[in-house]
Image 1 (cartoon, rainbow, N blue to C red):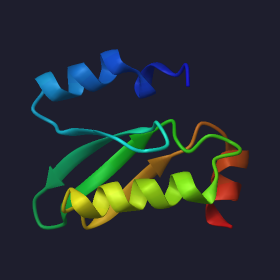
Image 2 (tube, rainbow, N blue to C red; image 1 turned 120 degrees about the vertical axis):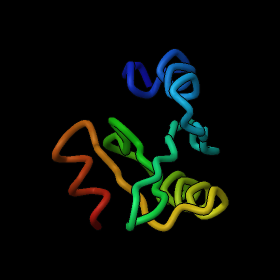
Image 3 (cartoon, rainbow, N blue to C red; image 1 turned 60 degrees about the horizontal axis):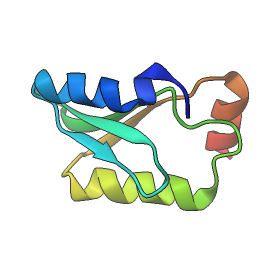
Image 4 (cartoon, helix red, strand yellow; image 1 turned 90 degrees about the vertical axis):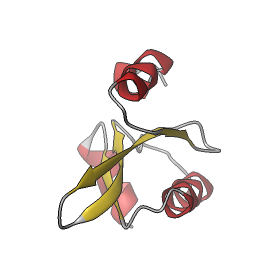
Length: 87
């Protein structure tokens, strides 16, 4: 992945801002956010990528669950990746 929002530098910045960063088995970064009333969620900017497999998706869901997140916010890089995610 060569997206800045999926880079080590971005993860370090998020951590310096007080957010927990999670690196999944598949190599994606997710960042734990907390909102009043709705709770904690895992946000994955510019992920999933096209061609992301089911194992990587399951790894992301496991990571979110282990972090105590109630929901997941994905922000794929392309519309094609979003269509694949929904299938």
